[in-house]
Length: 195
Image 1 (cartoon, rainbow, N blue to C red):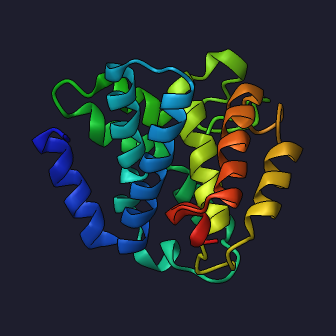
Image 2 (image 1 turned 45 degrees about the vertical axis):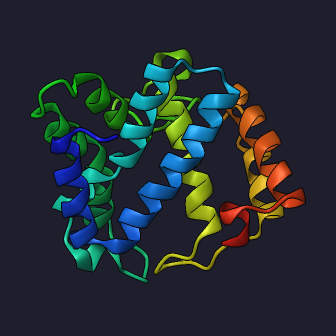
């Protein structure tokens, strides 16, 4: 169950962008499944799923015209999009007891190879929860249509995870996620059916 403060933010995100809100729900569902497979404890799983639900909360500060733009973003617009991790951190850091969740959200776009943002962290410098959310965020984005792209099939997504293993994504998280996603091909659930 979400803290009342987080509920208010999530409701505001739903009003701002139903697409982003639904994306956050799917990412939280996936990270919950991954946390179970990675043997996260109950408190760790709760923290991870809360951070996943709120990982894009900083997008409330971005104009809808940028969030829904079908064309390529110009450098200024891209910078604004990248700023959502910092803005999410700033918003969540104002909530009582949300310091760790704010830290996870701040770093959910860091890459295993150090080429991510906002701090350019690499490898195990990146909080594990942020690494899990980063992968689930990317998987959901690939599996679902956006204003700028169509949905990709699950087989393609699995290939992309393998291609980016050790570059964009933590290799261990890729291994766990790929095994879970491959099972979705055999016994489809909501995630696979959306592909």
